[in-house]
Length: 541
Image (cartoon, rainbow, N blue to C red; front, top):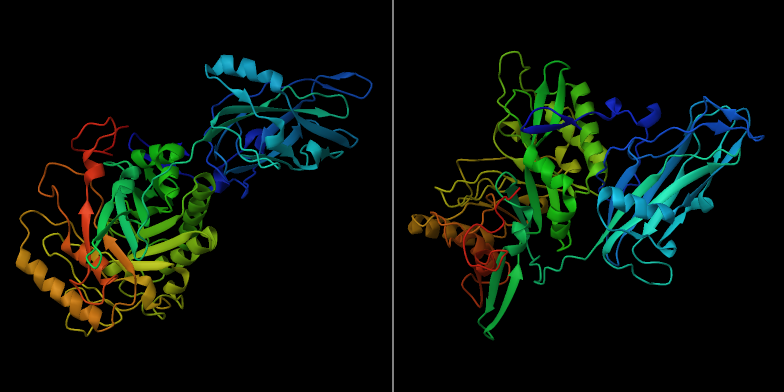
């Protein structure tokens, strides 16, 4: 990644990445996040079988994931597997085949610990293994060996679990010609305790939230709780909500010198991703999905006016990002692109559909791809002739309305039943081609101010109940405005009736029946140091 300025970090194309010794190796086997410290290896002199020193020959060992000789990895106690690839290279090919053997060297742990100022334990032998015993072939005339795979496990074959702590696995290589690599690849492995959230996750609805990383820590969502009260037996169940969280802000920006469309992370987003174990993994361990929300970057270039070459390049940047960070998917929201700027191409109706298709191809089926349906950028997605024959919905897991106005409590934006009198007539949408009604979220709930017009809320509540009873609500997807903590402001102690009502409609045939939901902010009132106050989970980096 290249630093663009103090505020943004750009993810560069895979075509421009150069690995150590001029080799390009990108592996899909990466299962964990790694951050590395620069420490370039020192070349050694090679030897022939007869012991003759070859001044210009140097055997090197390196990870295929990074050009640096320290690889930082994370496993969770009792549940974690790391698969790594290593390769031996030689600057001058030999005239004969050589066997290169990899092995661990625990004797190097003490010196590494002294150099880094951190305590380490050698990774026990039963918790790692080399494919083919660590033997790989360096063929005559070749400068690069075949790939060797290293696997580390948090639980060994006997069912024993490695305890939480910091471990080191130094790996060295020796060739059959008598040449010993002076390079060491250090696997710096943190085994962490699993985050235990404690409350059951309310999953009758797919509750979707956005979080602005310039303001909040993503772990804020773990304190979003509701109290479910059943008046038939007076039982109470405290539950946590929010199945999917979209992190902002990541944008599309334009690089004039190259004409590229760049995937640009804000400095806050970059910090959170680089500290994945602290900020993201605990959220995922509660059963939630953490996704990257991408929007316009105010440069005049966005999803709707990219060339085919820019789309291909942008998709490759997303692919590289997901090979580096273990996120669950991508949300696309084309806002703030500022189309029409001088020198920038006009909007067209095929660019965005092509981008959606390209992103699905690079993300595969295991990652979520969602879309926010909002204003002009997506209003033609029903028309396959306009989209160049692409049925956008076939490539999406979910889509939802982006209309959310705190001065107008909530609207029902239903593309599948636009003629229903309860459906918004200000924001009429048509169904996205290829997307089933069960995958579209029709309601995006704003926060309620203390000064909100209660009559207006009651009026919309009536519309919601009538729409629901008509059988038009096909989806269990429910959206909410950007997350916020408990602060002393106009939203203090706020709870939105539309949100609670939607939960109740999912649990009771008649609204106002035996099931009632109220928001519980007790956990948000207790700061991390145990004091009561405001601002828990506010940004602290």
